[in-house]
Image (cartoon, rainbow, N blue to C red; front, side):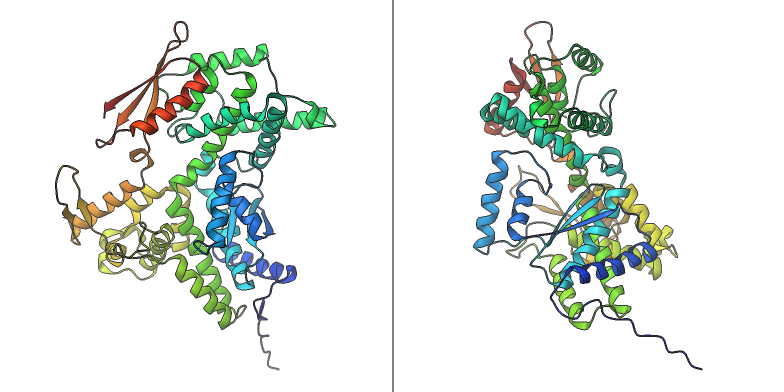
Length: 496
């Protein structure tokens, strides 16, 4: 008796989707992601949203729960106008670093695109969020949704009690300092960011348990003695200089009321939550793109999607990883999707079929398990270190990378690095430095604060590569610092 293997059935055969097809596709994608690639992910929650909802998510940093602020409405109006006039498209998905990991899919997507973005977001981004050391160290995926719910309701209560204008002034000032409201190198004293999120989330949960109607609980006007002592102890433990301006102001400002301190803390925590994403754009998008590319090809190899779906996928994928040349009108820098995906595909190639050049540059990859190499890289690197470790001469040739020595005082530029061994290493270092946030964001720190006398707050900007602060922008931001501090603020500039 001859047994004939049953031909696997297609997950879908046309562009129309329904929830049954989505579930079948999700199950097939999950099997490849977990059993083949060995990914480790948070539980998934997938939601289908309309265009208007996607635009709304755009405007509020892609978060499902967010407090109200005029800047979000401004972004919504801009994106809506650009979309309606055809000047920009919309993302196929938005994914939230939370547990469960929430992925928003556009209802206008075809079934092929729904499968692609589930692979991209629900498994690629999800794995990266859960395993990368920056996200593990600085974000709390378990608590962020509860915290955002608390933040939204708290700020709404403040608007009801103290007026939208007073709340908006605090939010405006805190938003102006968001880039200087993060811990880059050290944890805050006593409570970590995760502990702080848990503490405030527990406070919100206590309110919900203690009152049938949460709106009866108004924000505190007076600071309880216990909270005041804890805050003053935190101030005494701050060792200057302090890099996190919002943290210092939240703890030490002589004029902020408890509800205003809470709002500053909310903005600071949200800023910290997004900071790892700024450090891992190439890796995060590269990981998600590599995962969706592998899974979609594997679905085709297993006979679960047909040639039509594969052609649609290849068209979309090619657009995502397209890298315009430097003289192309569409050029706006190096596409993080293109660079990240190319480097990860290259790592797989070097593990499976290394050339003599690869063996010389990356002897540790020769014969290694590419799945384990990639998972280690996704867990333990950020953009700058990933490029320094894994950018190969082949990728530099493929992207036609070279380095320029550009001195503002010279009337011309010099090509400082070409495609030879020394040049490759210099190009790699130069490109990696472009992804070092410390070299591009202003280094402004609190140097001193006369808390017992005239309350003078002294800030210092350390000038990097001769780049000084724009005078008008500096004055505008200092005005916001003064609003939160309440007394004279002085900013010095000093060369590194």
